[in-house]
Length: 479
Image (cartoon, rainbow, N blue to C red; front, side, top):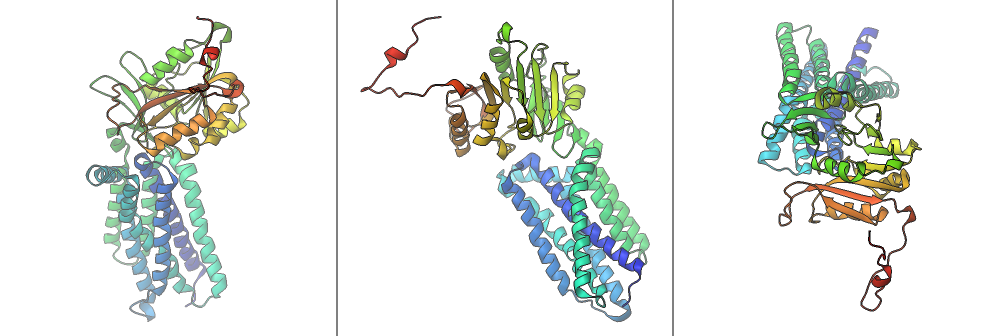
């Protein structure tokens, strides 16, 4: 068959949009699962696999599809198959990516089946990603049937280029533009609208009334499941590419909380006091800064709700966080006032800031770990702690709020401790969670690690019965 330029453009447009939807769906799935399973490479690899394998299978089975009727109905049969695939894919994407339905589904899995992050990720992707990606993957081989009279190598190159271009735009436009400016929830609606437009265009010559009813219904349901009203019911004030940010007050104790990705990041009680570990830092590290050292330079990696030094207008603070919206949201919804002129916000990754930083700090707080599921893997390494050490004054202090098992009952608790000690061997470890029970060995707590810069430290000696110099090492002056 001979294709007109308009028909060729239309076919390539479908291929482009299909590539866009697949990559955008993959990124949205990663972002939607992050509040529940974290953003580790293990869970992300499962999501990527749940896209790539069904996509490859879709290419294969789409190429084997044979229209049931040839001749004048050949075109219509291909269109009907494409329309059917896109409609089913739209339903799966709608239910799997929409805020309300995905939240209820994942929370049900965690509550009734398992809270293992690998299981949750695998179960979710099997239900909501495999089928739509498999069906969308058939789009390119199905449409290649219309190029039977074209040069195979040239046509294949064009198809792959257009499909990859759509994937590229889907990857960049989704994260850099849509998630940043309209939020994750409405980015899902955009994907549904694109799929619905493809579905409608493929059925415009037949059953138009039924097609429009289905298309309108899908868009309305997508909007309803992702509306700001739904987010408000979860106390979410913003849903961007990094976080679901919620602000709520606990009715039992009046604690106002800033919640990032389902994990409490900061809190202020009814008397205006922050969480115990922040108060501990204020009392022992900030309020005790000698007058001749003020204003001290303090670096906070992980801004949260900007509660460290909440009432301090003397020392100079640099807050660093990858989510650039935290400052405005904290001032508007959480703190209720603007930060003082002595507090600066740097919206960028922690290691990126440390790489370009030239300031030496008197005190550094690492507050980047929000629960065991939301610990950035690149921020628990010896290399990272070495970077932090490089930003300290020779006699400066490093502190880190680590969520871990207080009595070392799991591998992470033991290994993060050993990693921190490898850089700061003369450290202390304070349990600052209220209600700590040493006999309950399966819980986690806020553990406040602290150490002075080891730049001028001396080698250690081990005391034994045979060689014991403790009498000579002990300080002589009592102060």
